[in-house]
Length: 311
Ligand code: NAD
Ligand code: UDP
Image 1 (cartoon, rainbow, N blue to C red):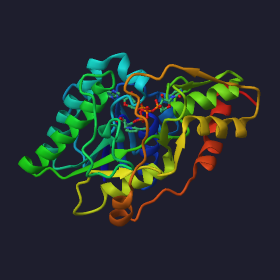
Image 2: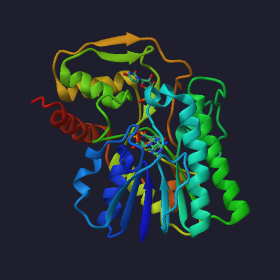
Image 3: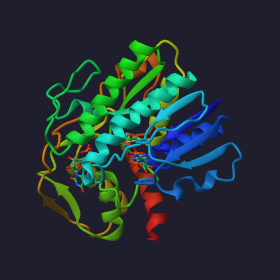
């Protein structure tokens, strides 16, 4: 198949391109290099089945493809809040452009949605049926509401135009090729520990997240995309739930060194807890995560050691 991956030069996109090429597909990576990097896909460039297009999903584009994975959008709160209006445009206009293309060429299309559609959840863990608790005017809304609107567009194109859709709700995912200055918690803690700097815990560090290793996530993506008779949304994430203090302790236990925890203000609207209910992924896709947090951190720390050139 010929497959388009928008946001293909980012953290998740680059792993997805690699996986799809490994399965023998032709892959077109479309990216505006906002938070993505050429170096993430540099090792794929010699493959004759791989192509990179510098383009912004806000502007329409035409390619003949069989499948589309729409991942274009900065994922770190620091990056998506930097230019909030651009983030909404990327989510909404990007979805419209991708869906219009899917409709025209008859491609199956996959949306990278997010656990952020649940906002600061008052149902725990979160099943797909939970409708969420999002502040529509807060600083996270450009992302949360942008992703919610994209989901709406996917289901309206499906109902009105018969577009063949798959929607995944991704819970916090980490691994090699996150940016060192990404601002997300796993990369921040690992990079700080490796540099011997203080570990910045926001709030009192009792808020929780559930961290999925990137290889597990990509396996879930491919299973959902290629499953017949399902639209989603399907939660993909690792149900192992940790406080930010527990995460910091795990990172320090592996890295060693003299870093101390320092407490910084909790950002506005920061969700207190988050854990996926993955019953649907288990029953419909036969999927569950295989890599636990200690194993995943080991691989991620090894990657950042190489990136930072620390021993
Ligand atoms: P990332 O920031 O590493 O990658 C996003 C990619 O999209 C980058 O390559 C960036 O340059 C590109 N991009 C951004 N705006 C664009 C635009 N207007 N036009 C073209 N390209 C654009 O983030 P990631 O972690 O790889 O996330 C990928 C997708 O998965 C995003 O849609 C994100 O919302 C979603 N997601 C990720 C997580 C996670 O934990 N990693 C969780 C939930 C959802
Ligand atoms: N966080 C933290 N220190 C950091 C970066 C983030 O304590 O240096 C916290 C943040 O406040 C949030 C959690 O870690 O409670 C996860 O943050 P991240 O930005 O990785 O993801 P999201 O909030 O989007 O789930």
